Length: 204
Image 1: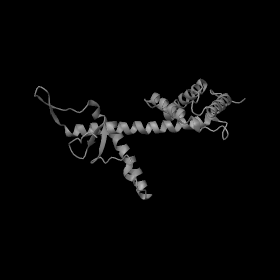
Image 2: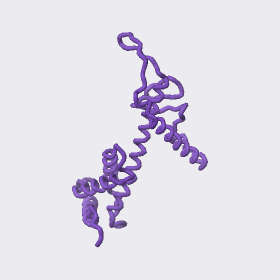
Image 3: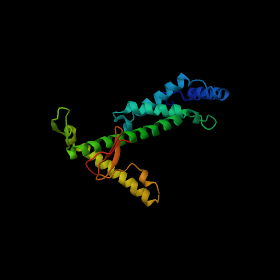
Image 4: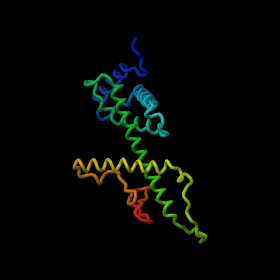
């Protein structure tokens, strides 16, 4: 007996065909996406998010939301004349959306950790409104080994990518998100931070 899937692929295909035909008749005022399509997309995204390679991330809800946004944005790219398997099409769309979101979250985590490490090393003083001098203390989590391991591993992978693109003769290697541990400039909360010295750059 064939395994029954949690998404009725045949019905989803039929609903999408009717929807795209309706859009073709009303290109300037397309109808809303059918509710059934949205339900199926949510089931596919939630199902994929429970797989072992995605289940461990704490931002899974953000991954699902981002993937659904991608599906809606590129729904028109599904061509019923070329494929009668919308389940596979949207599963692939959601899969790659998950990967992009994970990459984004890792980049933001790296920037946060890198900035915190930089701040802890400067150990700068600041003067309060009352004129009292205070010394900034690094947060307690800065002592966790995995924070530094994360930063080191991220920079190692980015350097590997940079070298690979240099070897390939690509000209836009500077566009990569590669930060030198001793000389790096990036944004945190909208502020430009240069870790090559003990000063922060101006906002841009």
